[in-house]
Image (tube, rainbow, N blue to C red; front, side):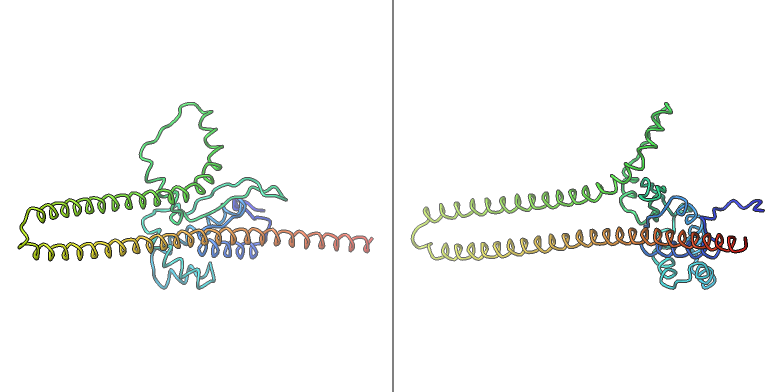
Length: 294
């Protein structure tokens, strides 16, 4: 009898279930986001959140306790270094489950489970929102809940584009300001040159030698100004190239996360198929044994 046993078996025996949860916890710690079914994600939340709270106290005892569950040195070091530092101020609720509809094949409810503090898009949106509005009608609330999952996925995709557009606007504004300053300097220099020419016309022939010296000084100043302009242009080009490289690296990391999530999902499907095949073979063997006994 299973009196008081409220946890889900997930169609697996205890040893298999513990190993599966440990592997999923390791992949979530290393990749910060994985895709799986809703039932497995809910059980994984119960499994991993106590380990994250344990990781907040960095001691040999807590490390040994966590290693007893995870059994992977890389995951334990990642949990106690980066994850624990990021989650230090959060008093629980370290994971988020985002439903992504049903899975092809078995029509199971699939989702994405991720660590809350490592999704920068949701953190920025939460800071921007300062006011809340509540609707009194229940139908509107039901509609919002139904469209919540779709809106979250769309925000995650549109967030990166908005950030890139804001960066481009800031760069354009900075360039325009620099151009305006340079134009003002050039206009001032031209006005000074015109005044110097007028002084040369009014002055007698004896004072031509010091005016020639002034012209040489202004020419040197112009050369220095052109050199400074070239240096500024080179700096802006290098900064733009660095920013483009950073954006490309972010895109590559997102693609790696997606690929790892897809591989994990494929591995789970393969494991489920293998288990079904084993169960079918066992049933066939049982039926054959029964027929032989008869």
